[in-house]
Image (tube, rainbow, N blue to C red; front, side):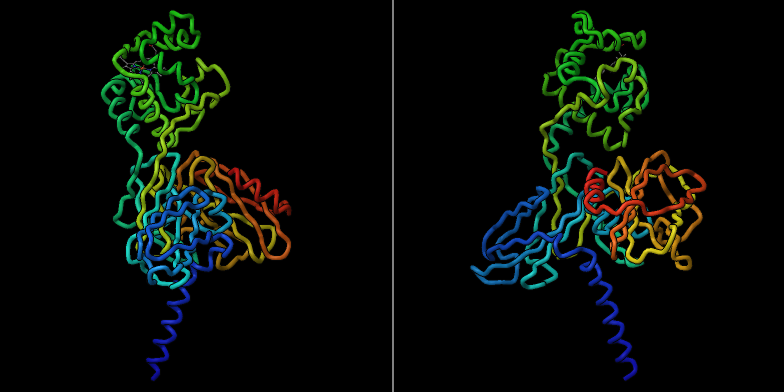
Length: 409
Ligand code: HEC
């Protein structure tokens, strides 16, 4: 008898734990859709995710209507507001391409008869993305890696650009895009030169300089060697090379003002010549159950730092604190100290005196308290190797202002 009670207790406890993820998200975040059972259906979410559903995916008959609930957490602001973070079960940092959950609200069934396909639009195409599934740890939803790589669609231009770069340019331009070789580093070059200029320069740089173009003349003075001409490459092929350079610069996290050489022959404000590519990259994800999934990859981490600790001026009841990278889609929670309720430290599953963290990244620490009067603070910070102790006081109370500011983070 005793054993039975224990078993029942354990079961209830387990049920609470798995139900917790449903509590994280406010009901209003879910988008609701109705689909007819025996029809192939394509839905489009608010953020442009295409949801492809085969007929008879759900338990129902013929013309019956099933209500679906879908939630998509893609931007940093959504993660901060919904208290979802990009850390895995070992405390490693992930960069997210989006977190999703689809629920059959009519039947509440956990699994689907046919996998549902999501086509997720993305500005940067990252072929290293894999699928993560959700797990609860320390009352947080954290992610654990699965074996599944996430497929990328519409990347023909990039694939061609990569090959053309390797065959024609990489002998003189370092593939890291950061270091100079015979030719200068090309990281983010698409942000500082006009598209037509890049095409003409690549075809024949001396011809462009001879027309009196001052930038081409300046660039040719960079050093004694001269770039070869590429009359055999079409405009389209050259565009694909720059599309590859643009995507790769983003993936490598090359900051806008990182490459020195570019500043010497700068023309207008940095970032003025944003080369617009017409590609429409998509991640493909299949859902066969109503669990959370996440498209992610392990972020590049180059060092260990002392933990980041916030010392709050007083105890706040319902407070949520997160650290969000400025340049990358990474958001990490702060958690309350077990002893001192005014002290918060950056979450890590194994408490250590050193945590893995990339140096040189600027971050925002975002705190908001949502019980009673709304209060918040957003603080810019650059983590250091040592002494990341921060005195922290909530500053403002304007919720609208807060929502507007975090949209832009
Ligand atoms: C033989 C070596 C060589 C090859 C191959 C080469 N480059 Fe260059 N590139 C240079 C050098 C050297 C410069 C600096 C200008 C000069 O002195 O001609 C340069 C400059 C550039 C610039 C100007 C950067 C700026 O700040 O505006 C771009 C863009 C560029 N190269 C793109 C390419 C592309 C794309 C390819 C392949 C299709 C390529 N290069 C192949 C040597 C090379």
